[in-house]
Length: 207
Image 1 (spheres, rainbow, N blue to C red):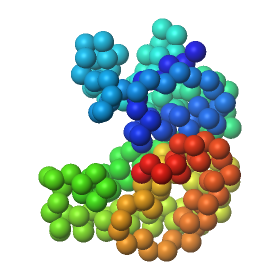
Image 2 (image 1 turned 120 degrees about the vertical axis):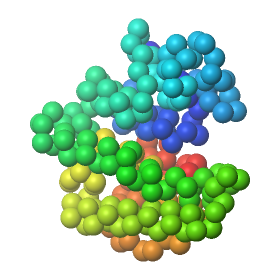
Image 3 (image 1 turned 180 degrees about the vertical axis):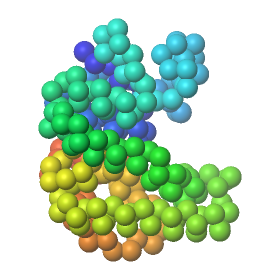
Image 4 (image 1 turned 135 degrees about the horizontal axis):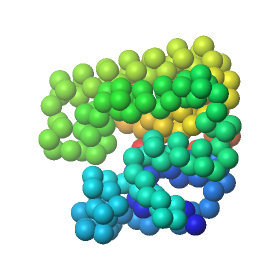
């Protein structure tokens, strides 16, 4: 059975949990990371030299990096409806997965650490303001994309891209800052409530 190493409060671990739910894929999960078993042990570092979660063990196959993991699982376990084989459709999904990791994450990092995690080294008022504004700008980009598709982030159908995007939007709504009304984003976030994986691993009270 698939083994998943990582605490369920981690947003990156929840990407994998939600993907498993979409694939109806059974797994065994172990809590690793801050507050649980240390990822700095020799045994864990042998699996992932970055000492980060999640890590999966699929038989003898070990993989880290959450976006690589969800792509692998969809490809390995019959997830063509999530991760299409057509090169252009797959590239569109990949585009939004990568954008979430490279652009959206960077926009919210400072504000989230300051306002939710209460990090003492992230309390500069101007930096919080700038990060919040940049975060909102990126949510506006999502709103325009969702208005164009009328449904999900990469098109008319739910795809693997909606998992990291949905988790990021949950984080945005859960952070105490001004939330301008983005109609397409609000409709989309409500649309995701039809999915059990979203309710279990995204809209579950964990930002």
